[in-house]
Length: 396
Ligand code: PMP
Image (cartoon, rainbow, N blue to C red; front, side, top):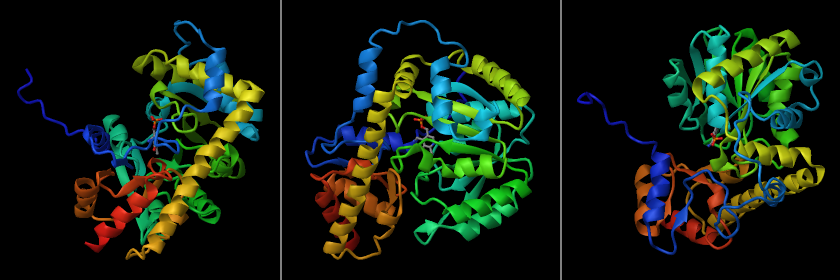
């Protein structure tokens, strides 16, 4: 029966880590995967998460409700929307999800079920490698909008394509720390984007995988989202993930929220979310939601988490600066200033596929084929080596 089954190539970013793990050279560096690493290049269990885990040593193995752990949903809703009229007026529907990916999936399914979608979605080019696959797999027609030009956000190209978007379509907006470019719109640019989104009657899905992780402050990172819902009264979906901000990558802990125009509509959206959740995963994963709920609902642990966010975001920022300083010191040909202008986990180096291969073959440095690097893979012990490898590669 499988004679005509095609071979589907894997997402290349997972191959990068596989190849890195198979390399036995002690100098090897992994700047491929988008996972935080500490100053020793090791995965980091956040101190706040350790504190929470010690309090929930045994949370049992019962099913969660379909929409997820109640204290998790209220804690996360309060965290993100605490200062909004949407929350004060009960205009937020929510459902626990399988991390950020599951949140996007539920958002797309709920839009369809609510008859609020024309089956078209706009994403940026480039974007996170899973956006296109995810929406296509749900039978959305995916449109790509130019996003990056001359090492910066291509505002003009983006606006031109936004103004021509098909009314009634969904649009994925990266709330902060655009993946993969690290270039976000300025607040003035966000205001223009919101105005066109309103004119074209587009439905924003705020992909919020990096709230708090980007700047160290959830509120600062959620600025664009708050502007849309509070200043412009735009209905939106928000896809949240605790993979990066609490380091809970493998626990698959996230939430989707819908901000609606009335509390009655929020009740309907909650019922739709439960329906699509039931049809796909039945009920969500328990352990991670107990951790997040404990962190958010315990003031001492929440204070520690605020410090942990600053630890991660400032280490990444320091590594950006070190890499840049080192490339300047080496007088490496090219303009490397985008590295310190970009924000979030990723940097775009702009080196060619041949140069990427050279970095791997000669220096055991592993990065995405787009030339995106995960700055979190750098530390005081390898940043000079990495800069030297870039320097000699681009001079080659
Ligand atoms: N959106 C973006 C932009 C991302 O970068 C990621 C993670 N790399 C996700 C969503 C989803 O991640 P997860 O499902 O691991 O939370």
